[in-house]
Image (cartoon, rainbow, N blue to C red; front, side, top):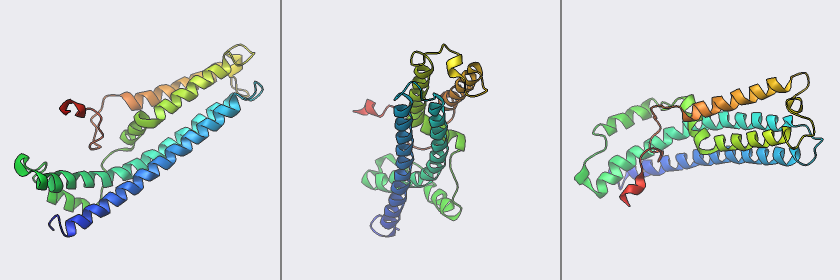
Length: 207
């Protein structure tokens, strides 16, 4: 199982699977951006178009967020294995003076192959994707909706925010609560379990 034999093929296989799931994440993000661009264009193309199409777009973006969070959990499984091999095989092979990152890495990796497990919770996966992609998208949609029911609509608020029998105050409250919940999930203090997200350490300090 040296670096020049089966271990190299194992590493290549894990890299391939990680790359495949990375591409699936990008596809979901692309769908969300396309939907957002479509609803923004349509909502502001005419003052007679209903504002709630922006809320429908936000709901669709939220659905893409849930799908992407599930994919991110699977992606993290392969990425954690790749990082284990990089830290304890390739880094150690290139420079053994700093020792191993994990003395029991073989046992841990073997256990993960015998019984594959998801390393992070759904809530943490949601937080990752919100921070990286979806919170800015939701912010743009919220800003667009605020403009659409404000200066762009000839009716005064809250009448301009009404949807059918729902009053504008109720709709505004729902939008505010949903956005606040997204911000809370993304920014609340937590112990991160996803590995090597380039999140808290400042890697540029060494340069």
